[in-house]
Image (cartoon, rainbow, N blue to C red):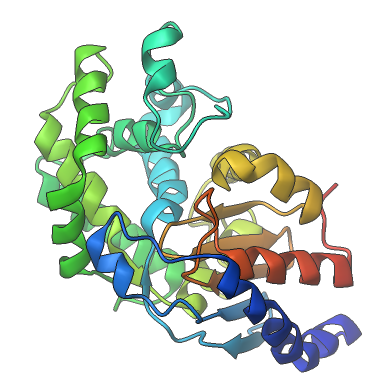
Length: 312
């Protein structure tokens, strides 16, 4: 084992506890009622390398729904189903600078397609591109893909969170109907939203998330089996979006302070990766005003500085 890996395994609990204090600066997401039950003071992390090494600390076993983290992987599946031209006819490639659930630029900027696949409007459009005859078939394909990347067939949808999202997602429903009016969605709006809410409600823990990140860190190849699970080109596209858009409209600050491809979700999860080396899964349900885990971001900033992980 490398000296860095040994230092990482040894120091991780200490760095995590130092970051835990930052949970007090955030609050759990309450606009999806089921997420409000999450423990605000929790913080967990798992880091995996390509040689089956696992470093973990804190509440790494705490289950949480992927929420917006799932958008990275539905993008990959949509690219595999439709190719680049098919996907980018429906979504753009630019950061917005707006909140993740904003519809402002859909009306103000031609041609009225979402700016990127990682904002809500973009992810709803991506959900419409997943192949399958029914919402259930599309969801099953998404789950199978996620399970393969996580190396764990127990991944499943949290039905309580799914119902909570479905009943309260008035803004997402508005976005979807706006997309339908703009000609971005061809399918039935409610069927597209069912797929979107389902994949946001897939539940994981830090280890499963780290394993999914590890595949991305190795350009789509499973380092354990050597099999290519996702074409390298599509992983490069996803990682580019993670750098520019992955941390909502705090992505620029995260790139400067941490410098790693990452994607957050409002359940407090963060997927991050050190290219060619590590997959990282973090959970810290207390969020800042941008929707990112306060303690999770601080912990990643600490680790990146300690080991000089920034890709820049």
